[in-house]
Length: 124
Image (cartoon, rainbow, N blue to C red):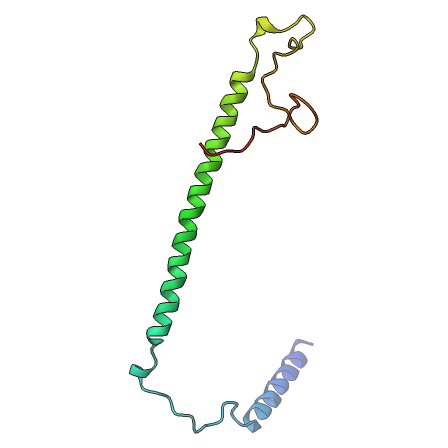
């Protein structure tokens, strides 16, 4: 069985070789002239476009770093506010709640002192 398979395989390969030899080459010769190497550079326009794209990327990176610093500063400030807003253990009432009026957290969307409320935004 292996011998018959090898003969069939060889016959197929010879048939494809004959078909490939009969086909004309795909890229036929053309009359297009290739310009000299000194005329194939992108020129001034290409330089200006590349320079503008690089400058935009640099400016966007500076802006992103500035915004990330603001976000980090606000997160640190919020964490510090949360740490200082936690009442001392002796100020808690026997049932584990804080006395009325001792909650220094700002009003949230669900009412005064609700968890998840954020302080008002402002520049520091």
